[in-house]
Figure 1: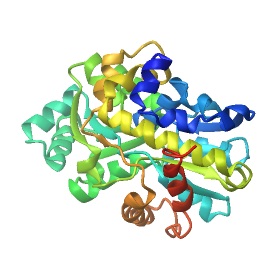
Figure 2: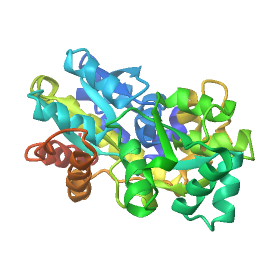
Figure 3: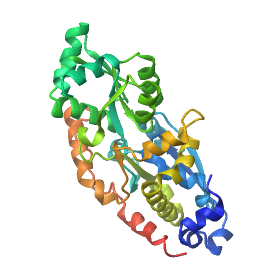
Figure 4: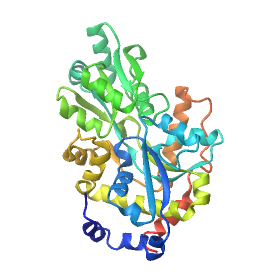
Length: 345
């Protein structure tokens, strides 16, 4: 954990502004946050762990979900104020009448495709050509390669499909795709129950560490360029009733994101406390934070064009009949006001 004095010094006076006497005098605002356990949500874990949220008058209650769709169900029931999940499920529930909007982006990418020993050998011999590798696997084993990924609709799953069919031109008869939860797919990969998998960071770093025979084949930026990863989305009720708190939350999140980008070793212990579960080292988390599978952005406008491409491709996949409209999905006003809290009390 970063000592309070160290954190305040590193923040260059920003947190004292956020935690002005007026804010400290107020009762803490409870914020119920749902998240999926992935590296793209690291800024959330940092601001929750280093005390900056509490200093700014926010009492965060973090709730873990094993996939975006499951988090969305809880959010739709009114038990979650803010979500740190993939953009696609957020767009879908908004199109169905749920009052939700994206108040900050968080990450682009965040996943990678890894192959077990047999499939990794085929990729090496095929010069990393997906079509040739999967065809060789089927010819050698008499069955399609079994690939684990998140349930349909999850952003990493969309990236997998795009890479297989659009980028790699893989024959559909050469692959069997099985939907699983985030932690289940990691366990199945290590147990040899599947031949390959889409793994989110930090699992994409951890799994090959645990079994060097498992090889990282491709990172999400090459699977679906500029693919939006995790975003922060808030309910309309929370934004209406706790507007100032939402803006402070965004300001803190942006600051934490800058720390994750510039000082992954500083952020790693806080991220490890939530994602590690005592089983992942701080060093592994630090390497995952700097993984080529992910980059960190916060401006909602930066992910808008790629979000539209993502949703359009999901129509092609059959995830939904018509792409959800993005009008009103991105709340630039809350984001811009959140940036102002970085320099004003």
